[in-house]
Length: 74
Image: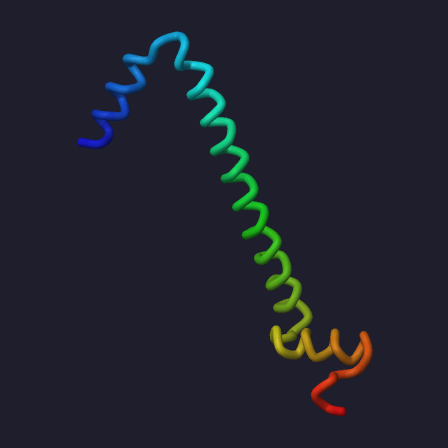
């Protein structure tokens, strides 16, 4: 039923509304690409961890040791 409503609305668009719908679609596309970018970064990071045979905790512990030592071991 919702598909029929969407088709009906798209078929009855006034020429003045086309620009507004284009802008909304553009904003939604940018939002989707940004969301995909965040997911792609997470997938890339976890693929790196898998290839290095690290867990997230091991990776974070190595970062602490390299930076200034783990503050919890002082």
